[in-house]
Image 1 (cartoon, rainbow, N blue to C red):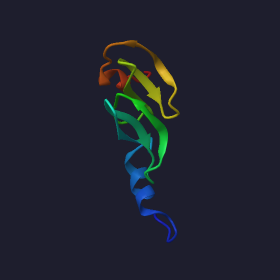
Image 2 (cartoon, rainbow, N blue to C red):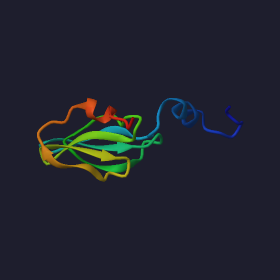
Image 3 (cartoon, rainbow, N blue to C red):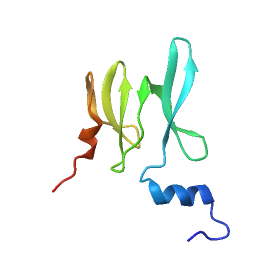
Image 4 (spheres, rainbow, N blue to C red):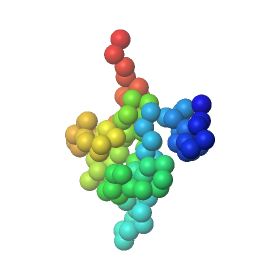
Length: 97
């Protein structure tokens, strides 16, 4: 339930996402760099990736860093170190059990 002083955007996002970061590009010489912004449009993870996918429900995202594909968490830490050319999005769906 939304209270009178609660932000509607934040409330709606809370119904559908576990991580409230969104890929956003910045145009640079030589191409775009991707980072992640919050719901207010502020960069939380700076534009440093060649490619950035949406965060999944488990809080992980696949990005391309230095021409290698890695998995990061919402703090930008590498969960899978940069040594692979590609990583399938299905790997992020893995759950214990």
